[in-house]
Image (cartoon, rainbow, N blue to C red; front, side):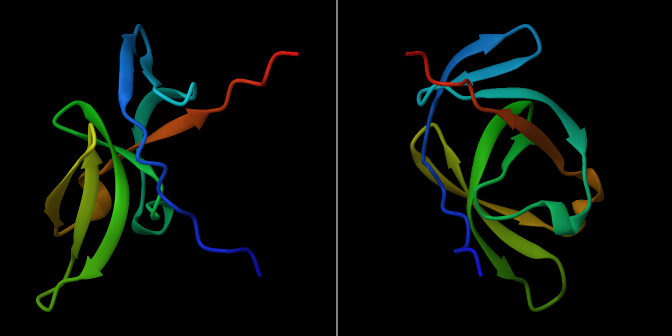
Length: 98
């Protein structure tokens, strides 16, 4: 069994035409709407048009989830009732140059 994903706590280095470049060299491509099962710890989601990495997820007693997200090195709490409104970035890893 594979270990659970871990957040990288990378920060946004620059805004690109179709996404963002992270401090660790990865690129986030344009976000797309996703379902609940696609958002995991370590996923990058769009919050108010800005990429945030999910660092923890908790169940809410009344339904939905509470997401802890990394916003440029700071943890923020985001209550989410429905994942229908969540947009997830595709993470592109740039191959290492030799």
